[in-house]
Every structure is written in C-alpha cells, then in structure tokens.
Amino acid sequence: MTYTFKLARRLAVSRAFGMLPALLLFAGCAGGDATSPENSPIDLPESGIYAWQPRESTPVALLVSPSSVTVETNQLLQVRARGRNRAGDDVAAPVTWSTTGGTILPDGRFSAASVGTYQVTGSTLTSDGPTMVKTSTITVVRRQAKVKAIAVTPGSATLSTGVSQTFAAIGKLASGDTVPIGVSWAAGGGAIDAGGLYVAGDTVGTFKVIATKDASTLADTVSVTIAAPPSDSTPPAPEPAPAPVLAQVTVVPATATLAPNTTKQFSAFGRTTAGDSVAVNVAFQATGGTISSGGLFNAGSTAGTFRLIATAGALADTSTITITAPLGSATYGVPFGPWAAWGDVTTLKANTEVFTASIGGVSADNILARIDAARTKRVKLFIAMTGGAHDNYMSTINGVYQFDIAKWKAKMNTFNTAAIKTAVAGAIADGTIVGNSVMDEPQVAGGGFDGNTWGPSGTLTKARVDSLCGYVKSIFPTLPAGVVHRHDIFEPTKSYRVCDFLVSQYSTPLGSVTTFRDGGLAMAQRDGMAIAFSMNLINGGTEDRDGTWDCTGAGGLGGASPKCRMTAQQVRDYGLVLGPAGCGFTMWQYDSNFMSRLDNQDAFKDVAARLATASSKTCRRQ
Image 1 (cartoon, rainbow, N blue to C red):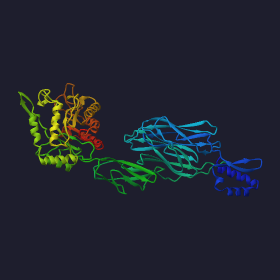
Image 2 (image 1 turned 90 degrees about the vertical axis):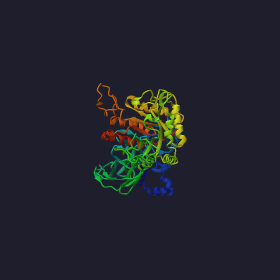
Image 3 (image 1 turned 90 degrees about the horizontal axis):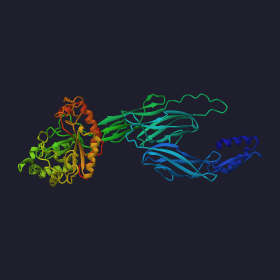
Image 4 (image 1 turned 135 degrees about the horizontal axis):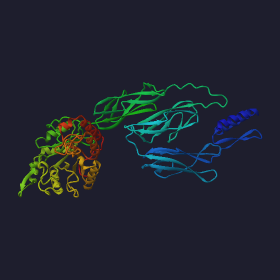
C-alpha cells in the first residue's frame, strides 16, 4: 500500500471524527518532513488518533538489477541493488559486490574481456543480522563488429500501469543470420533496467523502448502503450485506439559502394505503429565523407567501411558505406594486382581497373616514367629491377652453365644514377614503390620447366640471395628488397638475414590454403621478415588427372597437362584467405582471356573490396 493511499484513507476516517482541521494543522507544522517517504503513519485504533514514527530503514530483502543480461566483451554494465523493508518499501542497502569472472567495481560497474557466463553477487546485512545475498547472471558474448541491424522483441506491448515486460535484442548480419549482442536500453513512460526489464509508469499513453549498440550507430525502437488499470467498482470505459505514431526510421539504400570523391543520394522514410509509411524529417550524419541535410553523401579519399546514420528524435537507422579507391592509393589497405599488368609505361592492360598494384619488371630506361604513371593512377608498384628470363644472368663458368652474379650486378648497376636514385627514394617515401624483387624462384635448378633453371642444385642458397638483397641496399638504402619463391621449398630450415620480404605463391594441389598461409606467416615471423602472398591463376587450379586433359569444371586449360586454371570461386576463396594476411597480394599472371571473363572480374572485385579495408603492412624487415 503506497503512502499516498494510506494518507487518503486516514483523512477519510478522520472526517468521521471531526478531526480534519487538527490533522491538517499537524501536517502544515511538520513541513516537508511530514510527507517524507522516510516516515510512515501508524494506527492507534483505541483513540482513532494517528501518530508518526520513522519508517524501518533496515532491509529484510535484497533486489539486484538486472537479474540476467547479455553484454559484449569489454562492455560496461551497471549492476544495481536496492533493499526492501518489512512494509514493502524500497530502502537503501549498502552492498558488497563479488563476481565469478570479469571485474566489478565497488559501485557495481561490471565488465569482462573474455566470453562466458558469470555470476555477480551483492550481499548486505538484514534487520535480523545475517548476511543476505542476491545474484545476477551475466552472459558475455564476443563483440560483433559485422552486425548490420538490431531487432527488439516483442515488437510492441500494451501494459497497465505498474506492470512489467521484458524486452530482448538480437543482432542481424548481412547474411540474415542472427547473433547475440549487448545493447544499452532507454525508455519513456516507465523505467527499464540493463537487462531489458521495463516497468510501466503511472502516465497513460504510447511510449518508446530503444535498444542501442555501439554508441548509437545501430538502434531499434518499439512502442509500449500504457493503459489505466480498471476501477475497483466500475468496469473501465472503452479506450479509443491510440493514434498511430512514428515507430521506425529506415534509410535507403541500406548499403552503398562508392569510389573516392564521388557522391551518393540517401533518403529516409518513417513507419508508424499502424505499419504505414510516412515522410519523416531526419538529421543525417556520416563517417568517411560529408553529408548534406538533404542526404547527399560526398565520399572522402580514404578507402574503408563507414556508417551513415539518420536520426529522428529517439529513432535511428544506419547504412553501411564502402569506399574503394580505383587502382589503389598510398592509404589503400593491401596492394593487389597481377604480374605484368602494364601495357606500355603509361597505361594498364584491359580489365585491370579493380587492381591496386602493378607488378613486373622495370628497366633503367622506363622506371622514371612508370613511377610518374603510378603516382598519376594512384597505383603501387612491386618492381623487379633484375627480372626477366634467367638466360639474361647465366654464363658458362668452369664448364658449367649457371647463374653469373657479375651479369646480375651489371644489370643492377644500370639503375645507379642520381636521377633514378632520387626518384626511387621519393617513390618509397610516398608509398608508390612497395619493394623490389631481386630474383624469381631461386630453388629452380638442374633443368627446370622450359629451361627455367639457375644451374646445378646448390648454385643458389639463401645466403647467396641475401647477398643480392644487400647489393640492392648498397645502391638504394631505403628500398625493401625481397625474393619470390614458395616459403616451404627453398632451404626452409635456413633463414634470410638481409632480404626484407618473401613472395610465396599458392596453387590448389598444395592442399589447405589456410595451412599454407599459416606456414608462411610462421616462417616470416621466425626470420623477422615480411611476407606477401600470391596465387597461380593460370596453372594453379584443380589438376585434371582423369585421363583426358580438358579441365572440365575448372577455369580452363593451364600451361600443360594436367594443369588447369583457377575457377572464379577459387580466386575468391583463396584471395580472401591469403590477401589480408600479407604486405601485398599478387597473382601469376595477367592473361587477357582470364581477365575478360565476367565471373573472374566479379571475384577480383570481391577480393579487392576486402583488401581495401584490410590493415596495411610494410614489406620491410622488422
């Protein structure tokens, strides 16, 4: 029984005794303290007179809020406690907190860095002396960064004053799957705790319950209608249906992919509690660019995934914006492109617009033009100053046809000019040049494919390749120097000490792409060097070993039986695993037929979009 109700009853009784003036005089003299909830009237039935005494302030029961809740890792949760005295009134309850996991502060603030289910316990002394405890169950889930929307259930509720309703929120991924998430709750017309338990207040009307994730970037809103409780003696009058009110805001489109410095028009509409679509005035805000009050988004120059938010009062909706830089840029995630993508020194070959890097050989005659063209097109360069056919660097030495380091150094020396050294230093500083490969496949020996050999086995070693990287650095001290070969086949137990990076190429017959990636990363970490990954488009698909070399179901015939080209799905799957892991992602090699296929182009776009948002890494030894 509330104090107001008790006082009203006593006033009614006092009128029967003719004591109302005296009672009012007493209340007036007592001032604010007389009506304080810390005092309660008690009956003296023998005389019909009422006296006042302090309310019992020691709790006989303890309540903890929320009783159960789901939060995300490192999400701060306020756990609260209150006591109840013998009269059923709320009273202060000094609480000592403890938890089975995570951290809880003396004021009840809880957080946990690890997923799991934890028990948070509050304890306090009762009026009878023994310690009383109450426990809240907190489920901690992994923070969900890829949630595109959240949904609150139930979608609406009608409650009488003082009646409670528990709401829940789930996250929705782009695939349509749902995941558990932690949210912050807010509500009108009543009170809601951190676990979604809503208690209707005394005011009749329609109000909103709002669940928000990640500092208001994602939100969902549902309506709560609070109806007056029925009278004790007369049935309630029929209530008119509440007028439809705005219940939801929707942004159109929900996702968009833009090139840098381009525009996209967004709009928003509302939906009422009756399900009707209506015009709505919203305030737009966005990251990754600027947006006008009318919803026109101007993309910035930085690639990545960003958010646009439309807000109308307590309602909000978001759209995901992906900005992809054409042909890459110095700030673009992981550089990506095929070997020999250049046509001449100023243009790229057909169907290469999606790529962010050009990879291939250069000469002293064209390197300056290629650096200038790369800057204009915002393309990054993997270069090979000493690339080309192995025969360019072979001689008969002591009667054996083998690698001739003198020829290799002579080619390298053609770049040792003041103009080239200045241009290369500038291109390294602004991110245009990623690195220089000193040699391709040093493990090939003893009569390789199509004469691709460096001489007898043992002609080249990691120590000798290290000397080539050292020679490059003597001319270009800031230029990352590396080598191209699979990480697992050329002296895998030995380490490079000078070379900065390794480009390791994957093909389907090598087995699990994830195992291949992890092996390369482990070797690079062991040797203190960087790694870039590659995949063999032309000969790296599923091999055709059924007796008829037709590569049915594959991406087409490879260079020789049983080699087949990769399929578009293999390009997509391998690229998404290997690409983000390294300091660059290359492909062997540019082929006009392969590049012109629409399914392959779609796969390249998917990989490029992922690499656009991947963390950029240096190809320099750490």
